[in-house]
Every structure is written in structure tokens, then in C-alpha cells.
Image (cartoon, rainbow, N blue to C red):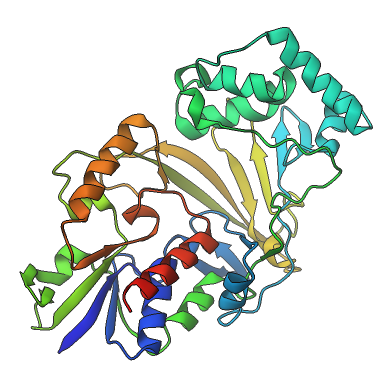
Length: 378
């Protein structure tokens, strides 16, 4: 059989592209190296709780078109992301807002908070930040930086803030309202029943093979002018949509792009019905090895008798590990630009998604990019 598209990766980009192409009468086959669909937004039921296996994902967007699009495949609840920061026994609301400043300094009005922050920034006299620490201090002052930025950032990057470049933090949002909603987007929520069911609805009626990588699946690459690849069964594919790592597609011929990885420890607590009272608690002390604890039931306002919690540990990425966060520093961005030029010479492959574009995408932006890629094919 000749397929129009071999889609490598059953995450959000691949699923949207596959759905749209099937709707347009194109033949598609989707493969994924994991044993499941939905990529990093994969959820599975544990103790009747939808567990986010690869970290917390909250859908949010200001684009009505994208919001209407995802609502074709799932009904969303009204969850509002309001994380809490834990620092040496103290709890602070995130993002940095008047509740945060009131807890930190006892200030009540926005003018008092602004005056306190301006006073701390003024004492530091930083006019030309040389590193991330100086950049953050020049934006939020000493107290917010020391308690809520420094330790968390160092854990995420695996380096001291003085060793990180200033451009990583362009701004740190300060909100002078009593509003704990992390996102400013108009539409926000969690799909009832989990993200996996949403992606499965996108892929309904589409042939999907899991547990197999692109290199294992395809036996011939660049097979001819009209064929991008073929497989061991003799099927051919006119084009490839590749959502894996861009440098891996080219066998790392220009060198490795760098990532940060994550490690998860998940615990099922059958005798506890409410572990921390919030879906996400960030641990901002450097000495606490994990960055956050997720209590999954709170994403769907669960009332189950038990609960499931996940501790999230940042980790150095090595080849073979799961890549989560692109390290978009000057060295890696320059290398990515070289890979992009190389990718432009491969006319039969569409590179998409977080790994294919070496860019951290929010979910709505992934969907938008996939829809744009579909339109470009018309």
C-alpha cells in the first residue's frame, strides 16, 4: 500500500496532523516509540484518578479557534492553575502577586508592594546584568529572588544562577492584584477523563502502531523522488511528518542539541484522601531535590478515598534519556539553526512539535503549528 503520510510520533502535533489529513481523504499511518499515544500529555487511570505520567499539563489559550478545536475531542472542566510555592515551611502564592507580597512583607496595597520592590532593586544598583542572578535581582529584588526564584532555577538548570546567562530570564511577571490564576488566557481547563482519551478521539479510525521507533520501522529512507520511505512489509510513504529530535533524524552529524530531562517518582496513597490540598506545589529551596509535587486528583476536583502524588526531579540529559526542555542558549540555538538549514534540504519531511522544532511549546501553540503545517500541504 502507498500511504500519503507516515507520521512519526503520536503526540499532540502528530495526532492533530493525522486527524486533519484523514478528514481530507489522505491515507496516514502513525507510529510511536512509546507503548502509548498522547506523548508527554499521556494520562492513565490509577485508583480512578487521571495521572499525568510526564508532568502536569494544563490546557490554556486565548485563541477561541483553538479552544473550539480541542472541544471537539473532549469536554473540559473549569480547573484554574494556581500553584503554591513552599520555602522553608512558608507557603507563597504563584505567580508573584499581592497575596505573595502580603505574606512576604505584610504589605496590603499595590503601591506599598511596588515601593518595597523598588527599594530592594535600588539598593542593588545593577545596571548591566552579567548573569541570571543579577538579571533576576534587577527585576524582582532580593526577597522574591532568594525565596522563590534562586533555588528552583538552579535545580531546573543544574547550575548556579551566577553561571547562567542573563538572557534566560527576560522578565519575571509581577502582578499587583490579588489573583492567583497563573495564566492570563481566557480559556483554561483539563479534559475530563484525561488527555489520552482526547488524543484517542483525534486518532479515531487511523492506523496507529506503538512501541516502535522510526529507524526500526522504516527499512529504506529517501527511497525515491515520489517516495519518502518504505517499511519491511513493502508499504511506501509519500511524505514523513517527523516529531522526534531533529538532530537524531540526521544521526547527530552536526553534534548533539542539549536538553534538560526529568525523573518522576509516583506514590499511591490509599489511606490518604488529600495529601497537599493543591494540584501543584513548587519547592523552591535548593536543598530539596525535587522541584514540585503534583497531586493529580485535584486537576479534576477528585473525591476518591485515596490519592496519587508525583515528585518531579530535574535531571541532566544524556543520549537515550527522555528530552523534555530544550536548552535554548546561544550555543544550542546556533547548532539548531545549522540543523534547520539541513532540514530545508529534505523536501519530503515535515519537522514539527517540540523536538522537531527544538522549542518549548504550550499545547495550544502545538495545535496551531500542526494546523498551519496541514494548510501548507494543501
